[in-house]
Image (tube, rainbow, N blue to C red; front, side):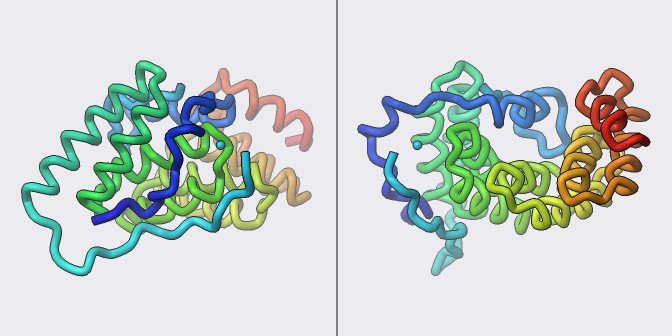
Length: 216
């Protein structure tokens, strides 16, 4: 089964550099997030094509493909952790090609796209991962982060509302939700979100600064 994103040229991969936007989200993935990406860590120049969501396979994925996809996903996570994002992306592509239902590979690949400011591709993969794990906050948070980077604040806020319900103890979700509602001009919701973030993580400087700005 071909990868949903087959046209990623090798020549461009030499120019990939992790961007700061994905560092916090990938760091959370390392620190025991419920999505369980294990060892994945955070740390492209032509117009992007419109990405396609992960395609459903025409036939059932074989057990052998599932197993190999899991192996490649683990390898990709290790490569990402060591900073070899181009090689990690290759492995995630192969994993998704073998098993389009591999949510960890989709999520990991989305983080790499996001780190390289390829937000349309990231959103497509976060959406696919979220569809496979609708009760998980991490894909929603990831998609919201890319929506915010693209200026799609209402879409981000909707994702963060859902993420806060899925994982009400996730301080990063509340901080991001505060930022979204602050951009929308809703100081009440922004303040409430920042307050929850600070209650969960008192040293969250972003939430504390946001709270000061909105007068919460």
